[in-house]
Amino acid sequence: MSNQSNGSNVALITGANKGIGLEIARQLGRQGVTVLIGARDEGRGREAAGGLRSPGIDAYHVSLDVTDVATIAPLPALIERQFGRLDILVNNAGVASGWDLPTSATPLAMVREVFETNFFGVIAVTQALLPLLRKSPAGRVVNVSSGMGSLTGMSDPGYEFYGLNPLGYNASKTALNAFTVALANELKGTRIKVNSADPGWVRTDMGGANASHSVEEGADTPVWLATLPEDGPTGGFFNSRQRMSW
Ligand code: NAP
Image (spheres, rainbow, N blue to C red):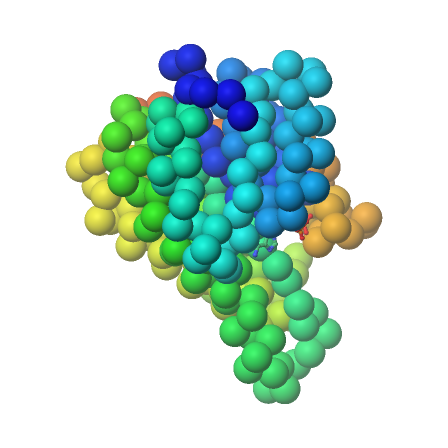
């Protein structure tokens, strides 16, 4: 693994070995950002980083299972030692289950399992890396949420996913949005911005082949939030670069 980032910004993207996360890494890399591909599987992470390096992106794999404190704890020291800085954290790793189960009969264990990744994992990774982000001249935290976590959407019969209620998934994204607001409020007055992104319905393993958006389209808003200028927003929820309802 190479040392330091030669002064360029450094971004860690969690769950970046495939899907939207990999595309976020590609788009940030094309802008000259050094991208750290967070992946829980060593082989998949290395392959993804290697695939980005061949067209000239400065990409590296870092081992990270967001539910495993043993992989989170060493990260800050590793990143500081090998790359010198961290400017952008994209909390993208996510899981979904129980799509067809009614809310009243969704096993609690299933809900807890989804929360471990989509909510508790984000908190653990962000808390660990915040000291490094505070040293950045323009720290950015992007939480990849979902329109399905919008209470406004869930309550609106006109919303495209109205009635689709995988309990753990939707509730974990609502909770993630609460984390975005709370952390952004705490960090007001610092150089760090914290926002939630809804990528839309995207053709990935999670979104399926019939989804309306390409990965390129899905990654656009998270990348925009990851590279916001100093006068950009914080504490918001965005889809297609537009503010959306919580
Ligand atoms: P995906 O193709 O299933 O990719 C999910 C990624 O997260 C994979 O790299 C996966 O790694 C990783 N991951 C899962 N659990 C992890 C853990 N404990 N630690 C580290 N990495 C973990 O899904 P996607 O569609 O790209 O979704 C990315 C994000 O967008 C998710 O947060 C999702 O909720 C959100 N989102 C997606 C859509 C959509 O339509 N696709 C819509 C709204 C929001 P492995 O390969 O090892 O499993």
